[in-house]
Image 1 (cartoon, rainbow over the protein chains, first blue to last red):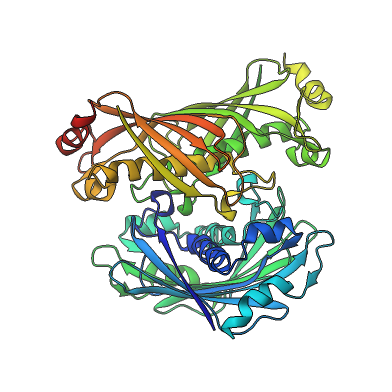
Image 2 (cartoon, each protein chain N blue to C red):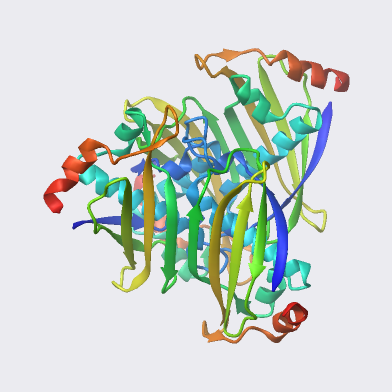
Length: 134
Length: 134
Length: 134
Length: 134
């Protein structure tokens, strides 16, 4: 199992008039969280795209437990529970500054070749980077 | 069962460098779709908030089938399958201009009193407006 | 002089916890306004990109007179005052439903070749489309 | 004169299909930059709102010199050149990782009482915090 923690400060632009983080912005927070998780094991997503591989999201689901608030320094714990083959699944738990869990979520991503938009296996260098954790 | 169709034009700001609609923006499209669905039966969400009721999202899940593209006039079909009691669940299907389904999604929302942030039953005027469809 | 009117409904995602449209979202509204202005004279921006021309913004300035509010159907009046040569300047005025002007703004855009990212003259088909108005 | 540096990582959600940071997102980056600048002198914006003061932007202008790119760790230098009386003006310069300036911008903000939405003078604790720099 691989796990990584990322901290994200809630921006004013991300609040809505309910005074909460707009429900759609967590998708962006989880993008940041999984990119930082991959960076931490030497796999920057930018390098992946430069190597001609795109990682679109194929599934996203989230349960909102509590609202996020402006200026909160949120902690997102990102987990990869299963060694990825053709797809990669990330699990996320978000905590506020009082360490209360405010949501749990999961995303599934595939690996597309940018040249033909066809899905492929998880690239070798991601598999090697993840191997030690499984 | 209640069903409503909404059309949403993809904005440039909603694309990402993959050339697709960023996966997080569908949350906004579904907000627009359910607000227009409620407006069509005489329940503008703005009036709901002015009456002291907030409708935060408690669950959101989406499966991405195909990418959305810039300038596409997307059709979102919003469905309420079950008559709501304390929660309301919307189902969405999004189609591109070639009438290909590009995703399916669902959101669950609750009704909070703005004064005490406590959840309550679906307001009477929403129940009355939906009654004819069930 | 060329002038065009576009209507844009404020989304919940575009409000902030002040209860106003977040100041950065007007950039998106003006994108929509100028794209619809160009579409109205037969120049869809999408076709421009497909022809290998990009139109990045080089200057943007805005004065905020009143806040935009949730669910307002804003009217944006887009004006091209000068016949464009190498750059094109759009002026915008936004009005709320009470017909109060809530801001005024301007953007300057250039025309880049997607192949070499070099700026060029305004494409001939945009010049022809605009000619009757000047 | 008061000056502060903030670093902001470009998110995928902030790119557009041109492969650049969408022009409207810099408004958010500058929000982050001025909030961090104020935090650095002991004036968190959140505390300001909790004290019943809102700081809406009344003017924003930006010149784009070069595009921002995905994953760049942008440096924003925020400057207050004049001691604020009833309004506060922030100047911003953004640099990419190659230390090339990619834009320059300015925002003007006012101080509103949340209770009556009337503008007032710059709050005493912000004036005190800024005094040493002028």
